[in-house]
Structures are given as structure tokens and as C-alpha cells.
Image (cartoon, rainbow, N blue to C red):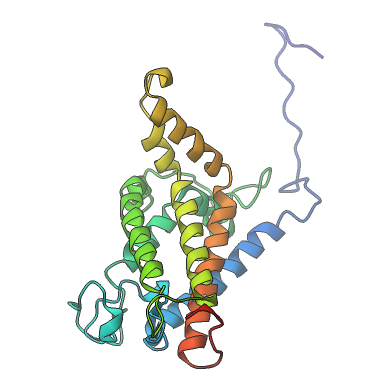
Length: 266
């Protein structure tokens, strides 16, 4: 039926159900909650454990304690000095952890993840929002999401520190060395760089505000590369959570002498 200027449009059908979706739309937000809660719980315990974070023999430092700048750190693990007080409630890497947390909290993907899972805003496509009113990101504290581009610069600096840790770890009692722990550290560093470079802010820095790509071939190539990574931003976000936890657990296991690091060289 078509409407004319004199024919009012037909009203929408009155549907009592909140959604007509019959698939398991609730599974994705549920798994997101379980995954994030499990990771945050593990990371919090490890950050405040303040033990088994450094393997002196091979210079392995877990990323959860990097850079280790507390007076309570093992001196050899403090590549950048010790200037924070030693306190049980102050993480050894308190200089960088807040910025890493804020970078991920304001990340475009993670915002989608916890908006849908924890806040049910909305939990899935074609499913009503869990709140009566929607104000977007125009009010505090969500207004702070706009600071993501600045936390990106901090994340780049921290990725450089993690890269330096991986370089320092190529050590053995006799000089140069390379073991399974080095593989774990480098895989984590590469994954972190991929996730950081796939950030929407990085993509804008590479090619934003350019009117003619032909006049900026270097930036165009960089923008094209970052754009390809950007399509995998969600996968990289979860991958880096896994590599961070795996790297920390491996270093902890070697430091606690639960396992012995398998050495290829040295």
C-alpha cells in the first residue's frame, strides 16, 4: 500500500516482545563479560603480587611490571631507575599501568565491548537498550573517551619500553642468549605493536586531514598499511590480552622455578 499526501502512513505494529530475535544474541555479551572479568582478575592479582616478575639469569621481565620503577623492585630489573615508593598497594609499574588501562578503556573496540556486555547499551543489534535514556558520550565520565588519541601516544611510548625489555632479555650468563622465553616476549611485543598501530587514532594520524593522497605518497602508504590492520582491531585487542597473560605466566613460572626455560642459544 502506498501513501499519498492525503493518506496517513500506517502505524507500526504493536509488538509486546522486546525483540523478535530467536538466536542466542545474549551469548556474545556474556562471553565478553566472562573473558574481561577473568583477565582483569588475573592481571590485578599479578600486579599486586609483587613477586616472580623477573628472571635474573636471562633478564626476563614480565610486561605487567615494566618498567619496574619502585624501590621494591629487584635492582637489575629497573632499567629506568627506581623513584616510586615501595608500598603493597602501589604497583611496581605504576608509572605506565594507568595509561595502558586508559588506552584500552577508551579504545573504540573495547568501548563497544563493554557498552554491550556490561552496560547493555545495547546488548545486540535489534535488541532494546538496557537504559531508558541514551545520552551517548556527551556527559562525564564518558566525555573522557575523547582523550583516546592522547593515550595512544602513551601506548606507543610503552610499546617502545616493552621492545627494549625484549632486547635486554636476549641475554645469557655467557653473553648473547635466546630461549623459549625470548620467543614469548617477542611474540607479545609484535602483537602489542600490531594492536597499537591498528588503533583508529593511529589511522587518523597517518592519513587524516589530507585532501590529496597523491601529494603525500609516504603517508598514503602508511595509512593503507594501518587501514589493513584496523580491520583486525577487534581480533588484535583480544590477542594482546592473551599474549600479555601468557607472557606474564611464563615469566612467573620460570622465576618461581616451576619450569626451566628451554634455551636455543646460551
